[in-house]
View 1 (tube, rainbow, N blue to C red):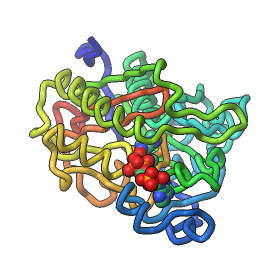
View 2 (view 1 turned 120 degrees about the horizontal axis):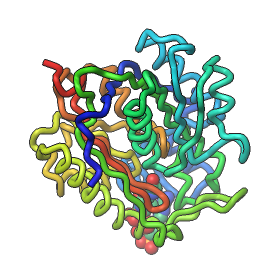
View 3 (view 1 turned 180 degrees about the horizontal axis):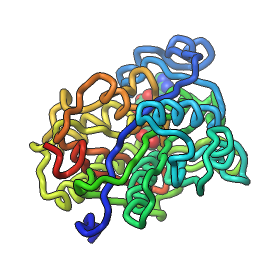
Length: 319
Ligand code: UT7
């Protein structure tokens, strides 16, 4: 059972940052070329607008610079870079290579593709590297889904968008923040959501919706159980931003009221690997998280992956 080993070195997040493309595409903009309406998109998904543009490398560099600045760290302080992305700029090398070079890091760098669960996969991996002796790990979640979205398909075009967010993870003597985690996948369901090389995203929206609620709740409950806390103890849930109705249904089943969730979907759409860290960074910028708070990150995605993590902000022994 994946519990956090108490004799391993823990970690805490010391910096965070976001980067969104400048170009805003509203629902009305989409309705100008697609058989859809602002009313349909808003009521069925919760999305009002999204940001489109940039490359995975550019957005990652921008969000990472901000995270390093808040952490007060220089590129030479970083021991490893983990970039979660489903939309690398090229097949080879990994996009983390370009990000590493542009940031001026001198450390190992690699990509993780776990679709919309990617950031939580990368965050857990970052904690693992710190447990093995790394001091500081830069964890980024970035996607430029607009490049693999068919803008003539009203079933997917209103949903997907571009963005990036990053965190700096540092080793902590106080037991670290990660109380429980869960990484899951069901590859037999991959045909419900996929894109062939060079192709566009194909999705059975209804089936993904049905599974999403179930697997998010299952994963969250596993992490809460490993952490030894209940949903009542959570100050904030940071869910994957795919559809507000999925978030509402999952939170209702978990027994978490919507005022305890971080929501950005109305302005960002579904940014896949960037969605959870973007919502986390916004909540942190808004001062919604206090030391000692319990936070649940939970996502699902193609693969079909699911991932969650329970954090105690500031570390286990933080007052
Ligand atoms: O990161 C994971 C990625 N994917 C997801 O999380 C997607 C999960 N699924 C969903 O979010 C939803 O299933 C969608 C938003 C994709 C679709 O919402 P829905 O409530 O499941 O709609 P539906 O597919 O059942 O379609 C209802 C109606 C249909 O018309 P009829 O058959 O009732 O006449 C669709 O043809 O809405 C129609 N429709 C649209 N109408 C206007 C489908 N897309 C649109 C559209 N604008 N964009």
